Length: 357
Image 1 (cartoon, one colour):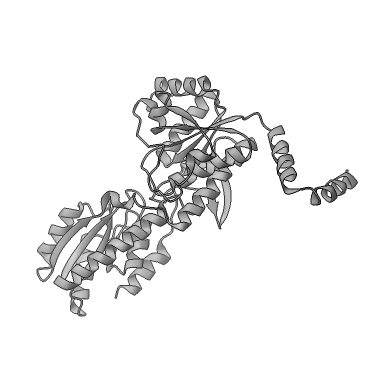
Image 2 (cartoon, rainbow, N blue to C red; image 1 turned 45 degrees about the vertical axis):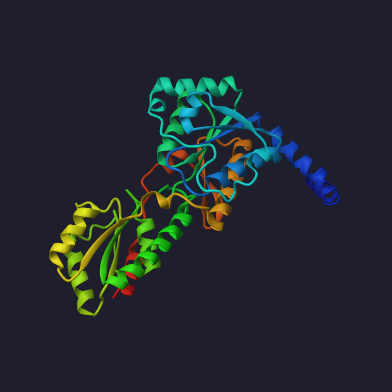
């Protein structure tokens, strides 16, 4: 067997690249029975989803597997809005934000009857496996579909919140960060011109990754995140110290899931009541964080994960998520990806405290 391997290696070295590729594909196809793969995007859109779809479709084309796009997420799966895609179907989308397959939140898919309809449409279209691009809610749906009907599924993490366990980064996070920093930079110009204090709300219902990193990157005076409840009194004390040291304007970045017990507008009123010297303004960045062309990092990440998802399916993997850990594509069980992410922000919080004096 050892001599056979050596002989095989010696022969392959001299084979033309096209023939080598054909042999590689044939070897992979021998190990699986998957001929048709469907891909959908679900939940909130994120920059880079199109790049991920493109990578899935072209990986399928490379490995000579049919690829189908499902429009409008799980709702489209229930309504049988499924269309075959090829390498040319996804041209010129790598630089586009959003998702050309559209996305939707499906109440019907949360029911067993709805998932049964979705499964029947997969079978009707002779689809052998499903790739789901989305966040934890999307993965929960994929896992239920797989468990109830023994259907192969793989998840690709696409959410700007970066709150999925088992991956260092999710598709869309880097772009959202850059969008937030750019917006804060512009707001700071007017804050400085008018000696105002701005409270800026960013997305992050359960995770403070965007608020904390964008806050440090944009030079915010204070950052409020769901994981750390600093309290409004500490905020007031901090702003008073800043005022005493000569600061005439301030930027406070607040994650939407902040645990201060007040929404952003109530917080603004509270600060204004206790700091008469400040003119307080509130800015909610909202859905601009989801839009825009994806950054280079998100395009490359999405391409890696899209190819990785197809290769994992062809390798017989199921009920897993492909992620990125220490710059390498890795896989984790979908059940693990749904566990609450244990983020340690201590170092970043310390950096934020030191650099905001």
